Image (cartoon, rainbow over all chains, first blue to last red; front, side, top):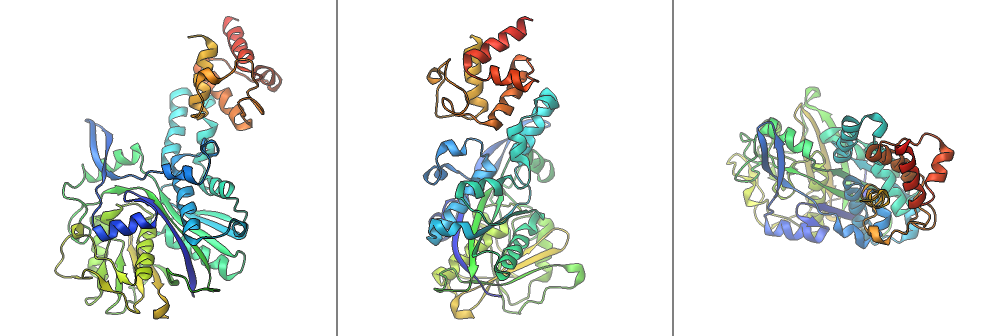
Amino acid sequence: MRIALRGVGVVGGFGCGVDDLRRTLIAGRCSPQTASVAGTEGAGEMPVFLADTSRLAAFIPNRALRRVDHFSRLAALGACLALEDARLPPTVRQALGLVIATGYGATRTTFSFLDTVLDHGDACASPTFFSNSVSNAAAAHVSILLKITGPSLTVSQFEMSVPAALLTACQWLEEKRVEGVLVGGVDEYCAVLGYSWQRFFGPGPTTGTRPLEWGRQSAIAGEGAAFFLLCRDEGDPPDYGFITDIRQGHLRHGGLDLAADALLLLGADGHQACARRYARHLPADARVATYTPLYGSLPVGPAFDMAVAALSIKAGRIFAPPPGAGENPGLKIVPRHARLDATPIRCLKFGREGEYAMVTLSGRGSI
Amino acid sequence: MTTNEKLKIIIIQELNLEEITPEEIDDEAPLFGEGLGLDSLDAVELVVQIQKHFGVEIKDMEEGRLAFRSINTLGGFIEERRAA
């Protein structure tokens, strides 16, 4: 397997576009915003990494966006940025496929739709909210807005949604159904998520996310989109390297077969229940990094991990994990400005129940 | 606030026509196609919003077609139904 990664489009709490993400990686810090949260004991606040989609107006006229909700705007902006980054001529877009991964889907719109039913009865349920609440609405909006006429699909498998979407994208490419695939992960924050988050995890950490401290619950919710333009390995070598392996599995069927000195970009995001999997299954000599303190915890976090891996390959070095990621003397955390050489980067994500996924990105020198 | 004025605000807010103001909507201009440029999904949304805000149901397609010609015809339709 060798799928070329031609473009990256990201929007999140760190900003918009690969340049903003690169700057944030170099700075090593990103501050979450504050969201108001309704609770059983009155209103409160919690930290959230929120994404701003205002830059979408640079790609698509406002009038065309009037029925496009925040979730679909995140998807559309991620997709536009990935196409812009890849410098893909508009004529090629017709031959593209589109796969969107999401853990929660369009929650703001879905709960707004339910509110219209609860408040005014089913006769007054908003058709606009309904049409945006169906699972494939974002893919439909993106296809229409960007004039993509290839197949589209939305995949939801909670924290494994992104690797599942990548597997589909690679399958389409290998079958030669499409010339390229825009594949991305999207999740949004909403008031109901905030309420639920506080009920489950409390008011949120005061010291920021510390995902490498396995015993600590320190996750901060995030939202955003990370998209990639994938193509077959044809033409010029891609700056971002290649996807050379995608693995999904469950620990009950056996452990991960990892090289003792693997370079691992961990999807650990401050959830204590998932952290114990990393603690138990990482090889002792593995070099590890995590960047979730820069974009928060969201089911499609692996898409952001993959974006960081792609930027690392392009830069030829591993970005230092944010200092706030925490301290763990049992880990070999990659040092500042470590040269990447020919080592593949393995983006590893464990879910709460033992499910896992690993996406491997390799630069030209490592193949 | 007159029914027409309230209608304009509802149309702008519920159909997300952020780029226009109530004053810019001509009472006689067509709501669909030319004029405001609304489409069939807007029509379905408007039927719901009129029921929600005015308690007036539009059940018949033909009466809807006549009512939805302009702000004036829609406002008149709503007032007529509410008076009945």
